[in-house]
Image 1 (cartoon, rainbow, N blue to C red):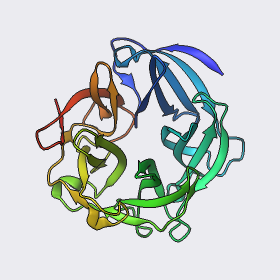
Image 2 (tube, rainbow, N blue to C red):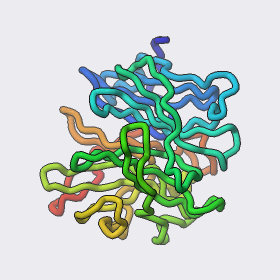
Image 3 (cartoon, rainbow, N blue to C red):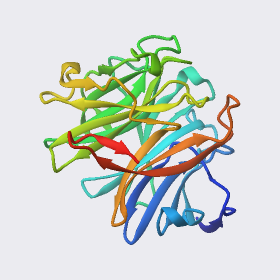
Image 4 (cartoon, rainbow, N blue to C red):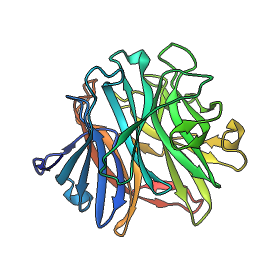
Length: 292
């Protein structure tokens, strides 16, 4: 199902949890539609023309689905020549949020449901899953909890047997510890992979604090070598590298490097006023990202 959708210009582009990948001569933005749980892919020529996009509905919750509500943060990944969409969903109860995966031969589908992703030893609340391909192996990273309490939210990593199966026990590689990570709520979420290939650096950028406020921001974990599932292999930077928004992805095009994120339009607590924005970034002398 494909349609042309034109959003009002120059109004900010509505949305949250942006995930954008280059494809062909343009870009693909995958999003969930909060009103009915659809997952859509919006194809656009470039960021500057994000308001003019072709939309394809790639998944819709089937009637009676046990994971057809609260569809959050889909990500689109090409792995081994196939395409995967990872997303979080529930049965309508927040405590039942888990991660699911769709699989297809082409980025616009058709997609089939490939099941739920979870660590069989810790089948708990899990959102914002992304994947890391590192030294010939595949890993899942996500935000979760140790128990039933809502806070703190931590970052976990586990080895994968394939793009649809977590094979190892989860390890916690980050928990809120600095004041700026918990000025409103103790949250680490939305892990995303960022690499500086030239200097051989690997980062996990993550979002911290309360997403429903303007306190939302982004921090960095830096890999120092060794087993990526070992918490000792990661150092947390003491300060955020980006303020004013969160749940960003990183995009490199012929025009430059960008962090694409969502921000709130107002100071009123809530999620209804989020819009997608972007900013260029560069590498500093130490090889770390600096948002311009």
